[in-house]
Image (cartoon, rainbow over all chains, first blue to last red):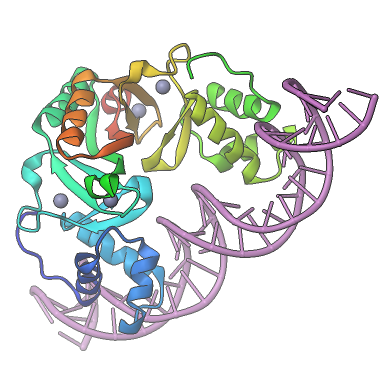
Length: 134
Length: 134
DNA sequence: TGACTAATGTAATAACATCACATATCGAGA
DNA sequence: TCTCGATATGTGATGTTATTACATTAGTCA
Ligand SMILES: [Zn+2]
Ligand SMILES: [Zn+2]
Ligand SMILES: [Zn+2]
Ligand SMILES: [Zn+2]
């Protein structure tokens, strides 16, 4: 859905935690940051994340088991393109971008091979510009 | 390295297990299959996998926490291109392919953004042709 | 009201991965 | 041959990530 979503209390707490964070957070780190707000169990975090992922407001980074708030908060649909993430292993910074050529190329492979794609993960690990020159 | 590798006993056991498997296996599934060969602890599997990953003989699928034998056993270097995986969520089949355009496109983004890439994950989840028509 | 759905709370458990430390194996070089 | 260092292995404990199961609460709509 592209419309705005009324977040429940827990969803809002988790989303705000991710939005304020410098970089991606693990579910358990989110849990720890929300202990003061009454969170006591992982499931409270995972359930909120599930909805936020549905809404496109949060992304899951598969290669580091962490979650990050979407960098394009007013365009959660990303125009139907696939999203790529560049993750700095030094500072944790995540850059989110969408590339039409890559999207097109993946679609070509899947259509040629009769593969019905549901979700695609593109994650680039490395060192960001700031950390590389430091 | 592109040269052949002398595998140790444990490495060979793990590699053979993955080679014989229909699809990707988790480390703990590998462990269970090797109990009869004296494997008792996860670390025996993870240590072997680490080497096999180094050698390029095995790939890790980040989005499903599983490992698969390389589909191109005689070209472990993959010609320096990035590797993409299409993973069927019905039957587990994994198709491995390399796309020069995608590789080039990722390189363009990283060089334009001063990002020093070390490893890139491209994983397409969905349903394969065989399962889609079944 | 009652029936239904979505959200929440909580404990327990499962699944995935690493740490710490001891032991073994093998080859290069004195 | 002996010694040393590098690599590989064995094992238990621990750390980290995610889900199952069940009970409860809160809103929605005949
Ligand atoms: Zn986004
Ligand atoms: Zn950085
Ligand atoms: Zn391969
Ligand atoms: Zn299939």
